[in-house]
Image (cartoon, rainbow, N blue to C red):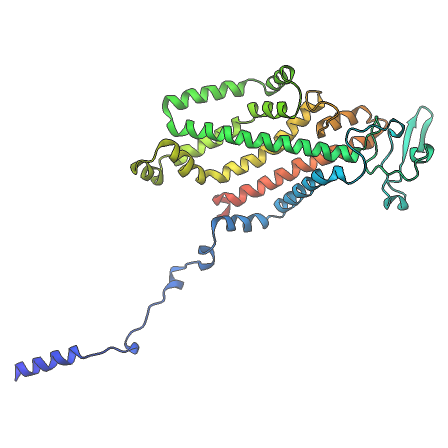
Length: 355
């Protein structure tokens, strides 16, 4: 009987079919605390969202876009060119068609004389009732509106080109120095210290005296002096990452040194690099403006913001409106790039996310 009962029990067990009610799936996603929304969000999307949450960064970006658009289309918005001189129309005050109806920007200005001040309007006195200079004209009868935006274009081209070239040189120098270390790093850092010890103004002045003044000469001069900061940042980031596991794994798989530097490490430090580039642009704009202000910049009849400020400074006491437009544009450019760079640094730096 026992054998029959055992056989029956085996047959009964083999024929048993479970039903869904006998089992219950365990859903512990809430217990694990997984943020599905954040987990599905890519890195650059997160950077984009974090950047546009900062109001000052957005304002800086908008100002950069607006000034860049005017630097492109501004010189074509009227019939004047940046170099054409109309001596019979020199020192005309700003005049705007719509605003002159309200008594502002109507072409009149107050001139100070030995006996007091007098209000004059050269448009009426010299017989140009249909002429409009939106920013006024300078001592040679050139349109300040056209020259301001032409100068902003030149300053932007010089600053951006110098910053990008400095990024390539400084980034490569710092990454190679930090990766190889040892005697290579020591020699490269001593060279960097020597280059950093020579005053920037001396290098730039000697270059501009030896070479022909122009846009390419200024870019070359800035290229030789502005790469030190980028190099130090790239070297510091390399020293932090070169002993990480992913670098060791690449080396174990037979990857070469330059492959590891530019394919493995560089993508992981792109955030600080971009931020440094954004901060270096206003520095390059100021350096170019200073060189042009002291007479070592763009040769006439070309112009930059620095040369326009230098020209307006000579007539500041008699015609102050000539210096205001280039100063305002340069100040807004430097402020906007600094605001945009500050917002980009917070968006790219993971440490700011935890604050």
